[in-house]
Image (tube, rainbow, N blue to C red; front, side, top):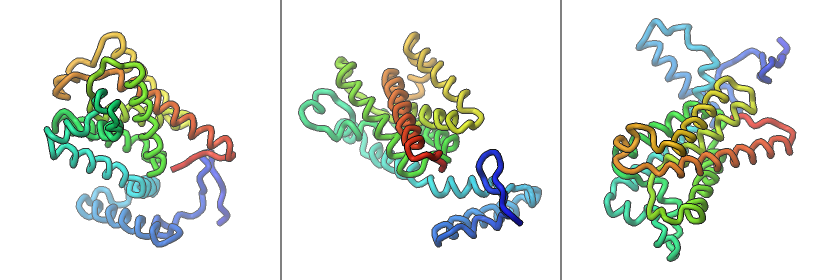
Length: 255
């Protein structure tokens, strides 16, 4: 049977399963996901024959791209384990940063006010990955994260000079969310406009009325709303660089 391309650019060639991907790494990934699907069908007989192969493909992407999420979560949990000393040593603190403790510009985004604050941000990170894992290859995840935290840190130093200290991943999460939504819009995937619109409305609310009701109680302390705005700007810039690179090489980035 001759392969043809559909409107989304995917091949309609006969699908032989994720285990036939080129290379041993691809075969191992396909084997893991296929056996996970078979196990689910054994536990729930009603699923037999109802798990689409496109879902298997999404599962491969999640396994392939998911390790940066686990790494970020592990670093955040490790940093939190040593509280309160770790918080004092790793948080963004303007005076110490200006005195040469530059590591705080990165480490501040991985420590939190408490375990409840950490779990809330890890839930947000999981949501981001679930929505945009098709774009979040390890390199892209690192690039988007660095762009977001770089813009946050520079803006703190230049614009928010009265801010004494800061911790948390929420600013970077806003950057990842914006970058992922822009990539969805760029590639004409449904939902990108909706997600970006929700983020813009949230940012506007925070700038005019302050933190969302209940957010400070959930986080266990004050919410620095400007971090969300700066992170979103960083995510927008990161997505712009990605799109510009796609145009320069004459292709479209796909996870």
